[in-house]
Length: 192
Image (cartoon, rainbow, N blue to C red):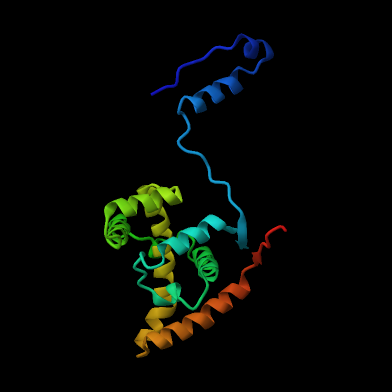
């Protein structure tokens, strides 16, 4: 649906018609959604980790069935886990090997949704985070890419050598520390 054209004689005289038309379209609902403005907590290579990302990470704890245990290690802080994922996403980039099928993302979303006893609580949590289910699916896509990368780079070699979960976790810690050392990670201190 095309927004109605609003005419402003003063704007036409000054040549601001395009600006006014854009403003009118935005006010008429032409914009899909507002962008989130948030405090930056860390810059990892060319990726940014925000306070909202941290809030989401904390909100998903206990709800997102993370199949790669080292990425969900409760001994690591939520911010460290986010930085790890940002490093891993930078390594995985958009390589097709790590891209999940849409059905895999939808299954992960369904599993996450089922962790809430009441669907109303699930939807309230989404609203509280300012997310639609489509937004959450996009975030889960990114998590699955990181998990697939770790599984292939760290998990499979450990398991093929007869290792267990403890060996996997230990190998992951060494592996991610090497990767983090190779990427510029800058923590942003809050202003007083």
